[in-house]
Length: 78
Image (cartoon, rainbow, N blue to C red; front, side, top):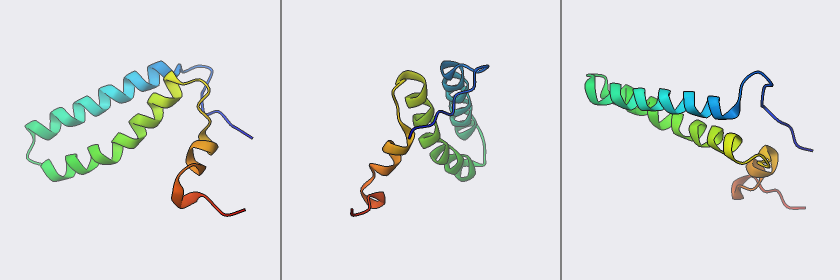
């Protein structure tokens, strides 16, 4: 069983573009701010979410449960 997180009103390409802008501005703040460690921590936490949105936007057959269950530490013996 697969499910889809896409909303009919928001295009996945728009979500990825918006996420990329947020990621870019967080990097920009990192290089221009005194809060280096806090912003770097936020950026590193945000990066997997950006990759996830990229997969949703540009791979229409991206199946979330099978992707998550493909990790070795989540594969259960039958």
